[in-house]
Length: 216
Image 1 (cartoon, rainbow, N blue to C red):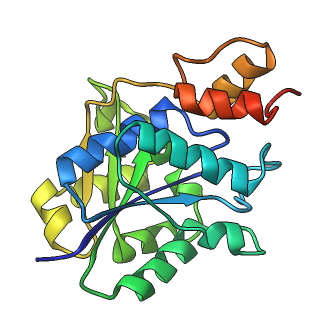
Image 2 (tube, helix red, strand yellow; image 1 turned 60 degrees about the horizontal axis):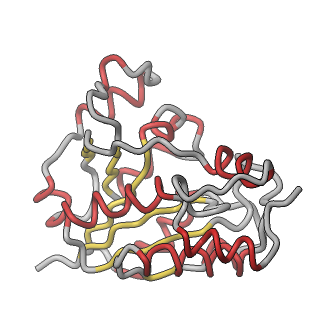
């Protein structure tokens, strides 16, 4: 049996119901041996994370425990002193897990639109599979994807069994993620003093209020 790891990275500033729903969708579909979360340290495409790494990790643990999803939190990007690139993180992960492990890197459809701006993005396919979660009715042909990304994604489409049983190189589109939430949206609601129970887990909201986060 191939050891299978599903990997979800992000700023998680804060973790919200969209993150949890994406992870749960693929956890249920793939049944991986491990669900690994990779909170960002200094993401090169974003500036000024609002919350300290330890707070973001604590909120991740609360949110996923509340969702009954077992997770492993990988702090390598937090501990890196330089800007973090996904391709470097996946190289480290591949070195750790070995050449035979199945690594499935998860993302939302919005990230797929920008994939060609990522450093060495074509190298990602040699390191991992890419699993994309989209809303019902999402169509790759109509999604205004960069042509090179659309071509790679379509040529590499595989089944869930292929994602589980081979190390890397396949893509998979799940069209059942009926959640559309951004961390920007959550932070804006919190700054307005609005309760965000429809956007984030109540335990995460409690943590935010107790630690006075996202007030400004």
